[in-house]
Length: 289
Image (tube, rainbow, N blue to C red; front, side):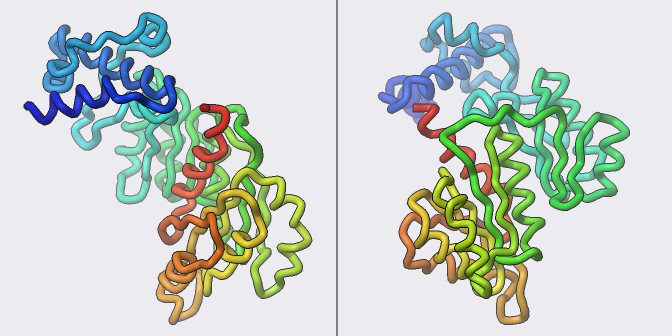
């Protein structure tokens, strides 16, 4: 309990670089405190250690005092994710049944979250969910959207470049994620290093980007080339595309991790969602500040 109190006090007393971050955390703690006083069992520990925290009236008025999660038995739907991180929880569809996906979506909707992203959902599951809820499904990347994309805002444009057409399913996962979160996205597909003139003919698009996502399988060289051309952050995504010695994307992953180009970060193999989410955060940093 002492460690919990210490952590709680650190959150409250820490001098955050951005006042908005502190305000959001104070709103969360205040919400948990009010719910504990009302006897909600899920917040007993956190609420008890936050009873001395009072969020400013303007802050608490800006956020509904909801319970932090909805327990469905097979899932605990995080209702405070958007409050804490600026974007709501995303449903990972792989490994879940269609009934579970529909139930989680309904849990969000019933608690006021009208826009939800689902990733890695196959067509069979999507068809079932569409009978229950009005989702838009993109079969080329396995993404479903309940509600609407956020209105585009931020520093500029996210550019997504792929080495080949075979990488497009990963690229579309990144693009749909970034668009859902409120970003303008430009797609440059099939501009790999085996025909580098295709990439160079789009140099103006690359130079105007606020962040570039470089997606490639095989030897994964595209990320290093893009990183050497652009003055913005580059997010490298290795894909599982390639022949035997590519080892399901490990060769591209190691190549990207060992890039000599500065400003290149790497996400996991085929992780288009992770790249799109990170690009969204980078694109919105100046606006947040």
